[in-house]
Amino acid sequence: MVERVYLARPRGFCAGVVMAIRAVERAADAYRAQGDLVVYHQIVHNETVVERLRREKRVHFVEDLSEVEALKKRHRLAGVIVFSAHGVPPSVREEAARMGFTAIDATCPLVTKVHTEARRYAAMGYTILLIGDSAEHQEVKGTLGEAPEHTILVAVHTQVGKDPRLADPRTVEVPDPEKVLVLTQTTLSVDDTDATIEILKRRFPKLVTPARSDLCYATKNRQDQVKRLAPLVDLFLVLSSRHSSNGMRLYELARQLTRARRIDGPKDLEEAWFEGVRQVGITSAASTPEDLVQGTVAWLEERFPGLEVMEEGEWEKIQFREPRPLPPEAVLKARS
Ligand code: SF4
Image (cartoon, rainbow, N blue to C red; front, side):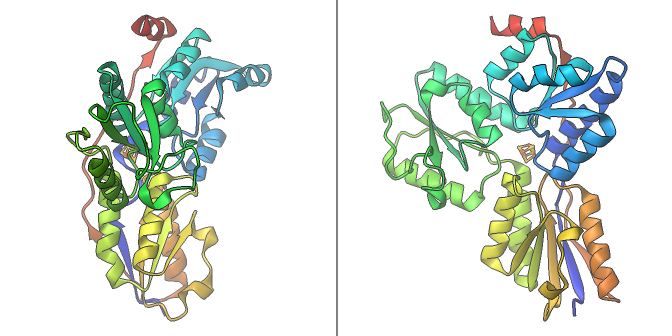
């Protein structure tokens, strides 16, 4: 019989996700008369968010710009493209401009910071060791695209071998060990990333690390709160899409510390999970909408009358500015 639910604070949308979704919604409304909006990649890694934007705002998501021609045959497009919160390689930016798209860049500023470091150190002849969870992750592709000839992808030390395109931090080789920089994807496990950087530091004593960790505040805060709440609960529910890197790291962490289940939303809940469970923790990925959390609480309240629901922790107060549309000429001029 569940008696108490601890709702982790912070949970759910981070400032980057709020900014990116708002950018898409506003652009879809602003350009409605001209036609439909195109978004490069899932704006954030959450199926519910993507499906709602498709349905309610007539947004088309593409994984490759070559899909645009086929889209044009079936829909009237506004000629505006939004780049997702995960960022894009410069080559995609330029190709979209050459195709005549006005761009709205919803890349999270914390990802842009990593891109800037990649460009700066590549120009100084450094090798960049980029720690990521998969070569297929959109954020990794974007950062790699800034200086592909200078960058080596490296796995988190606990994930070596999962993606063969990522080097082992214990054996990775660089052309000049005196000039090496480490950068990371923003949404990895804090503890595993720190340990991986320590391995690299032992191998390359001159390794340059960013002044401030590339792991973002939202990733760190959500993981910290799972660590605090896990000892109090018999079961942790983590609301996250399978594709959300920060959400899957939250789930892995919760599973290391207590019993945990990942769900997309309340539709996935099963009564059998709660046998013998008295205290439940709930958290959600930075891209999970809050109504799915509230639906989960409502599902529990229906089955466990008298359930006590406690909010634990503090909300974040960070906000990011929304991006402005950039005409194609401006993009091409900036690159020339
Ligand atoms: Fe930005 Fe972090 Fe949110 Fe990703 S998870 S959008 S890096 S704040």
